[in-house]
Length: 188
Ligand SMILES: [Zn+2]
Image 1 (cartoon, rainbow, N blue to C red):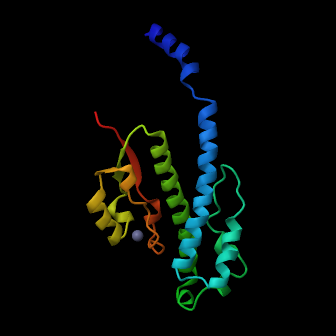
Image 2: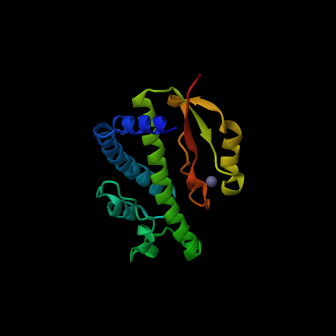
Image 3: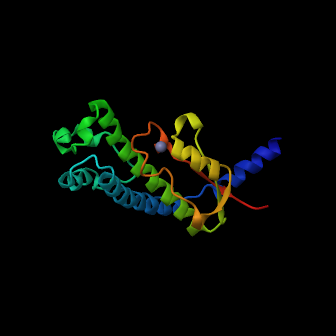
């Protein structure tokens, strides 16, 4: 037992990775930020919740890159021009509802960017070629995602063919932004 522990102690300094992962993490974090902005612009436009002239304004709120910092999910609805920026269609919703949709847009953009970075990392590292998809519980996801779950849950898919979750149409869903987990699948 003690011998085993000693062995572990001795080995530890060699197994803790130092320089390389830091560089990779930095690169992935910046890539995730850039992808987030692309996703955000796309979501803001496709949501039909905001007047076109406000999309750039909202995008600019998130433009500055701060390494390893989470995004404020409520930045859109905090702006003094929030209500004014809403389309006629969006003004039909209750204030709380529209606020939560605005928050979901940020969560979806963030989560999609994260999924893309994760899958890119898998591809670049080239340690395995397939992933299995793990979905949240049915109570947390909408009909559309339950249908996707039926198709993909626990299935193994080549990394190059894997769909990106959460999908951009889940803006009004309470928890679809949780997305799914991409788990490395290694054939034995
Ligand atoms: Zn949904």
